[in-house]
Structures are given as structure tokens and as C-alpha cells.
Image 1 (cartoon, rainbow, N blue to C red):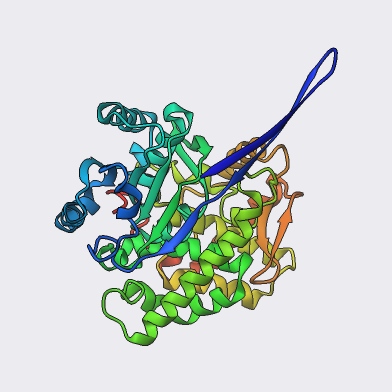
Image 2: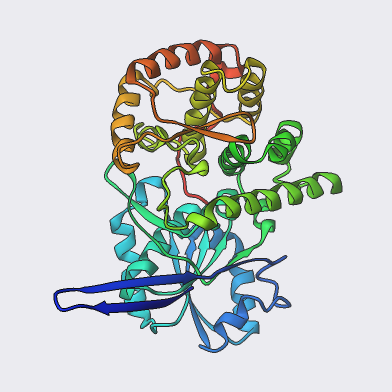
Length: 404
């Protein structure tokens, strides 16, 4: 949600406009968002007496009865738009289908759309909201780990264009984000793993305490769905502390730079070469695996530059590997790195700005990496990865379904 203020200065030969947009949004913890006793969601739609919900179809299949019981209890007429959005369907075609449903519903200008699903769903539906009448409000309920700790924390929304990751998009804050971590209990393990790559990202260059927790407890957090499918009370407490600190760290890093005017971005760790890598295979990488390969290579680069020790390099790669995240891939080649470097230089205004750890928990940006050095680092990295389980390959690396 935003408010505007602006001034206009007129001279005989020109007009100067200076405007500022104040952005406000809330991230609110809700235990059981579709429990009729919780009114946090209903309070936003009671004034309209109705709600339009764009929802991941897998999530809808799992929670359909609870969703309808909730809105019936609060006398809110619910219209449901189920969507199936895999990475290959994060497209203008899907975007147009959602916009068409906005029209059919007769959406009122200030009426917030309810978006329920993982990061792919909230990205595409959020971009539809940003574009529809240039500014339609929306409320997000993220249902994946990536959505809860990353995608719904920022204000970025987007679709892919061809083989270009998030090439078309906008900065469009939701009115609020309702954080209900109980959704993790029904999430497949590959999606938990996918989200844990984002926790690696936040921690390795932004918060060493989080990395320590991942290093020690990551495997159990993965298997117990962060304490929402089995696991002890202690595991649940660790999970709650870790995810809270991750969101807090994300906001500390993102909030001063919501529109990415400052291009040296700590949370772009893992996002230098991965945007090209992710969509290269016939079935795209899961986002978490793609960025993890980038982060792993960047960690080897940091060690080679003397920014971290060999012991810390292996600690980072070891934590990634134990979680089943990919360290390397046959698709990661010198040719791809050269192509990806050319692409990201355009995005980053001609400067590489490659984020690397210096040391764990802090960040340095490297701008002087040559294509030849990258090729040498890649050769070294592949040799390092051979000594890890699976030779550095990830578990369930490629997309085959949707982000439930």
C-alpha cells in the first residue's frame, strides 16, 4: 500500500516534478489463517462482502473445505480462480488469463485480490495486480517456504519472457502478507529444500547466526517440515527462531532499497549467473537449486580470492550438500557463464556486482572477475565438488510440477 506526495515547480521554459511514494505493508503471523476463529483475513473482505481468490490449484485441492468453511462462516461470497503455475507457465499467457478473470469478476478499483500459493503464484498474480488498472491492491498468503521467507517479503512481482527469468515485472507491494507456517506441513520435501536455498542465501552473506542453525539443524528441519510434520518441540522452536530471523534480515536488507535503485544488493547472492542457468535445461531447475549452484560457485570464488578460508568454503558447501542442494551441474559451463555474465551486466548497469561471502555472514561485491578467471574457477569448483556426496549433484533438481 502506498501514499504519494509531489511538488511541481514551474519556470518560463520548463516544469520540474518531484514526487515521493510512501510504501507501507504488514507481514502478520497467523496460526491457522483459515480457522474461522481468526478474523485477520476476513476483516479485509467483510466491507466488500465478497472476495476474489487466485490460488495454486494444489493448495486449493488440499485446503478447499477449510477455505470455503472459513468464508461461509464470515458471510463472504468467495470466487475462486485456481491456477497451475510451474516455472514454464510463469508467462504472459498465464498473466493474461488471470487478468481476464479480474474482468469477469468486475473487480472494484480499491478491492484487494487475495493471492494464495507459492512464489510462482504470488509473482504472476501480483504482476497481474500491478498491471490491472495500473495498481490493483492485493493480499498475499504464501504457502511455500520460499514464499514465506523470501518472495512475499519483497515487493517484486514478475513473469518470465522466453528463456529470460523475471524479465517483465514491477514493484508492487501487497497491502499485507499473512504468514502461516503450518502450510509447511503439507509441502513436499523438494519444495522445503527449494526454500532452504534462500535461507542459505540470506545467512551466508547476511546473518552468520542463521547459517550456524542451518549447519547444525538443517537436515532435521528439512525432514520435519520445520517442525510441522513430526519433530520435537525443540525443533519447532529452532524453526520459528530461524525463520523469524530470516524474515527480519531480509527486511533489513530490502526495506531501504525496495525499488532496487541501489544495485549492490546483498540478497543478490546466488543471482549473478543463475538467472541464465535456471531456464537452460529442457525442464528448468528448481529456483533453489539454480541459485545454490551459483552460490556454491561464488563461495569457491571467495575462497580462491582469499576472502574465506578453505575450511569455511567446505563448511558452506557441506551444509548445502547435506540438504540435497546442487553444488554443480553439467549445464554449468564456461560458455554459459560467459553468456550469463553478459546478461547480468545489462541488468546491473554494466557492473558485475557479484555478491560473495567475506567472511560467512558478511558480503563483498566483486566487479573485476574476467571470463577467463571464471573458467578457471569453474574448473577448480568442479574438482572440489567431486569429493561431496553425489559428486555435487542435487536431489530432485528439476521442475516437474507446481509450487504447492
